[in-house]
Length: 286
Image 1: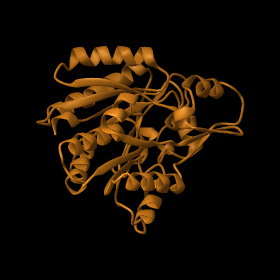
Image 2: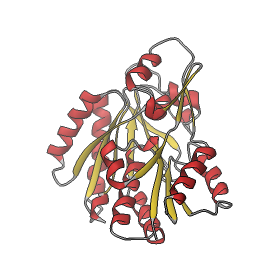
Image 3: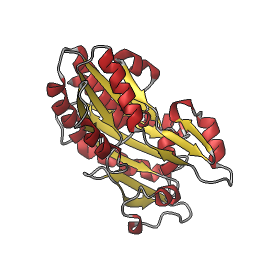
Image 4: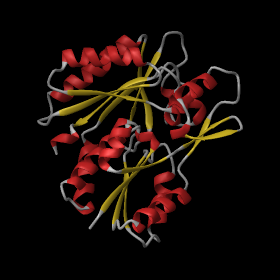
């Protein structure tokens, strides 16, 4: 029995991680005016330079079922009997529902669609755990419940410069709950249990937003009996990400701290300078 992993570029796995666990990563399409780019081929500089212009606002298109079928067919042809397909939250895209329907009629391999209920590092960590478990000899029927267990340990909080992008793209479920475009207001958001983005508050500075997040992390640490992996996420805000990483390492020496850069497919919705923390049980501890 051979098991493969498929995901999308919203996971923002590094090239080293993709190579280590032989993960197939399918690109989300980013649309800048009349130009379409596979996210994996669109540089951050090109994307953020475009955001600064007065041109038509960018949009995205999810991985197509044609791309999915091609990838699955190729893997089946290489001798894979089962495929664990881990993707962007169903709360912000219809892709997972469409994939589940497609899988009912796909016969060349057994497909296990997995809803990350999030994006970025939360999605990536599920892929990395799946890769580790496959390397250990586990089959998909044993792996998927552990992926769901990892997902259930997740805490995610992020702050955006303003809500204009999320409101425009319809990815914020309760935009009336917060006024987000006031001067020096940093809206605080999370993913709810349905994988939808919701506003939960606001702070006047990123420093105060960071304190809010670290207070939540501290509470989590008092409630769990497993090691945590904390990921600092940022959208073209590398210097602040380095500062947050250093502070977290000092304040919480018992946790492993890493970073993840948000790419265009997510930054279309969150905007530039977004900062956040995602924590879960450390996938290496399974």
